Length: 272
Ligand SMILES: C[S@@+](CC[C@H](N)C(=O)[O-])C[C@H]1O[C@@H](n2cnc3c(N)ncnc32)[C@H](O)[C@@H]1O
Image (tube, rainbow, N blue to C red; front, side):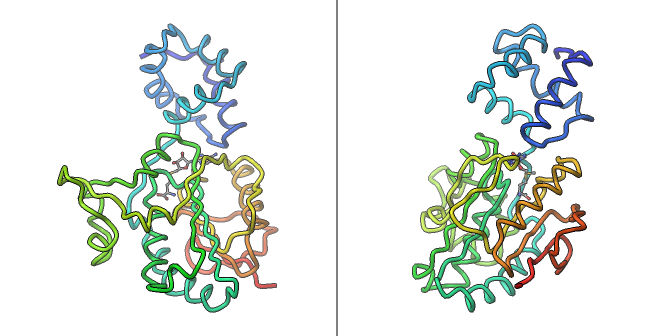
């Protein structure tokens, strides 16, 4: 493993935190462990030259490689399932009753390899049934890890990964692949999810506000100010009456945001 000096460690940690929000101040081993093989492969004998290169050029494909290694993309189907239950039993019925334009605007921010937005897509299909086609239900799913997004777009998961899916979901929403060990999300559900690269540190400028934002287990890597700034931007990008779901181990610390706390790690923007 290539050792990293205090100075280079601070430079890299500062660069990542400033640009991507991720706080790696206590992750020296993780940085050395995850980056050393890549540095060797690229022909760098030390971190100094690599960090000089990254910071001075900010070359997109090199930054992508770095982010692929430094992000933690751990996720699984039906994670923090009570949020999905609430989405299905309360949020969807409410939105469907009130959205006259038949548009449901959902964002999975920090979607990793796609399990969260695909589940939301399946729940919408379950709820709307034959009316699914009559609604604009496209889910925006974003991340900064290109590796995670590429896995997400394929929508291929092992049979074991589907073990916690509700009854019937495996047969209705996945098709077995010929290798007999993997399953792919069916086209109708895949096409309903739009995967995009988006850095949550950037201004949120999408075409329309959102009815629901899921940003779960992403801000755990951010410091308090970064998290509060992002939650304020989420609030401004949400329709009145819209929802924000964050991870179970997280909470909203913004004192000035009038979000109503509706259940653990779930918030609603007041209707007026
Ligand atoms: C642990 S995964 C969470 C996946 C899913 N939301 C869940 O709860 O299981 C965190 C994801 O956040 C992404 N992420 C971290 N910082 C980000 C940023 N600044 N902008 C966008 N995505 C980010 C990572 O790439 C990673 O895929």
